[in-house]
Image (cartoon, rainbow, N blue to C red; front, side, top):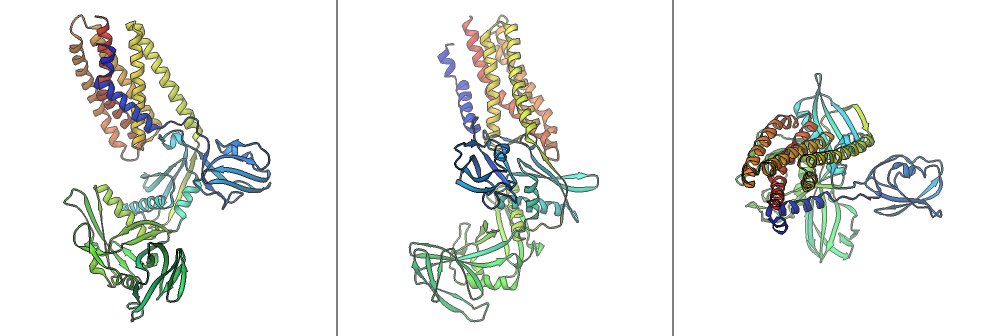
Length: 565
């Protein structure tokens, strides 16, 4: 076999393509400059720098000495100085006046040097044990759903929640990789403000009606577009973004475009949501004809909220809906703390009706998605309120310094292992090209495993990284088996026969290891998720080896064997 034929073997091409994809997915950025602000307390930066801002560099105005910010210590160097601190950020240049006696009271995290995500034990962060009062399984589920909803609404970093049993107590463990204790406290203490609105989309000079349900008599209003950012209703002018009241309903001047204006009417607030999941007999979760899952649950609305709903929907039209039948021309939009969470279509049969017990319906492609969607909607409708009082039992912040050291140790250990294995293979077979092939195969497996982790947003814990080493060790055994059955045994049978014998043993050993990982992986669905990460990494590494790197390596060994015939 010639080198050209080797390069164009589909096994080699597949490996090369997947390596390129993995490198793009990992997107290594070794020289990343800057830090991301995670929290800001009372001090020099309060109200001037918001969480999520990326700080690149800082200097005192007029000094000409600009310093890159790579960690919090680089920023703290300016604490105690007086004058103007000039910060270069992703949101432009920020200038902050310092008197010399302020504390900065700010926390930051390093910008990621790749798309890989690491667990709490590597990246550092905060872990807390929360104790809900009046605990039931339903209460714990509602606590976790509400906290997850808050994370989505407030744009906090990804957190992990799990139920844990400590003695006879049922607790919730929350972990925020790279987070701070302040973020945990904010997550629990926030009071969500729920609002639901229905927009009215009106052309210049078009009329609408209000008053029939709240006051007993409808009044006709005409909307006029008075400018690019101004509307006129009943002789009063309102700018875009301005709120106003008509017939006891609060409106927002939302938008003007192409001779059409949108005003958004407030239908419900958190005070109007009396209960969810009532009556229980209308609640269900069932499989749909297309293979997904549909759910339904009831909501109890206040009388005033029902009247506002009727006032606004009397102005909407019936239109065909995607799922068949008809719905109203506008959706009802759900907000939590002014951020839109969801929008729901309104059945045309509800037009102009005072409904105090509406039914919410939804859909998920899988059962898990449907359950999550239902839990999120329920949490939002409850104004993001926790179902019970929460006590913080413990709150620990883990430093990332250990994790960084551990990553370096893992990297050095892996490199030394690769070198040692290659030296042993060279000593046994006296073939430098075989050692090079083993080195390239092991490096390829590492890249492919990390690429898989980057694509799936999988958090790599210390045990998961140990699984990478375990998978590589398993792969080395296979490579030695391939070499032995081809190079060393060629006197007894052909190269192809040797590869068949090798693959029979490789598949058998791989299947045995995968089955051994199954109970560990199952345990990882519970409290011991880090152990599950070890099992998953090992299994993924074995599958990558069997179906991708081992076939490519065998073709390389065929090429080496053909050169010495």
